Length: 247
Image (cartoon, rainbow, N blue to C red; front, side, top):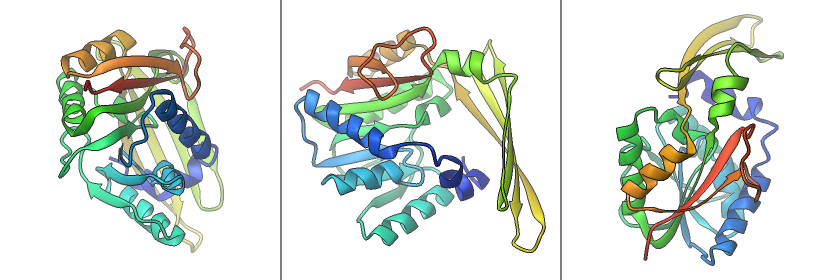
């Protein structure tokens, strides 16, 4: 769960182009000839993508298991005068009162589901809450990124408000990349308070995902290199999947 990271998430992800992500989501909708009136954003985080889609005329529900992230999303929605329904739930056990036209899970939300049974359960919940013909759009950090690019490297950021250090290790037996994060947050009086978090992401292979989608009753439609229309290659860092609930 994001706790300390939630406080500085938007600051540290300033370079993510959520408008381009929303453009791609709309492109997929148009390509698949659907115009969902209600969209669920699983692992909505601080709400940036959801709010961008609201600006384009979609109604959004955001689900996240971090109260801190949902608080950020709520404040951003209020500041922009937008109506965003937020639910404090885990993506592996979420519940809705009805179905939606599309479900999103972006920014490697599903990499955090590290168990095969739990991923299957999540996909089955997605199918259950999708309208017939509804779309499931999600991305994953690729095995190449998690097992080759990140391990052994140290990332850091320093400014007047926050300093963070990020180290990664990879367990090939579990196919899991562990992120050790250390934050030093300014208290505004010249002191920095240290907080630590540990995150784990599984390196899901494309064939594993396609198998689990099928077992969950979802039709695999495509996988691309990130938010593009290009096929993934051996050095693709982000995989973007599209699946559909059959009619």
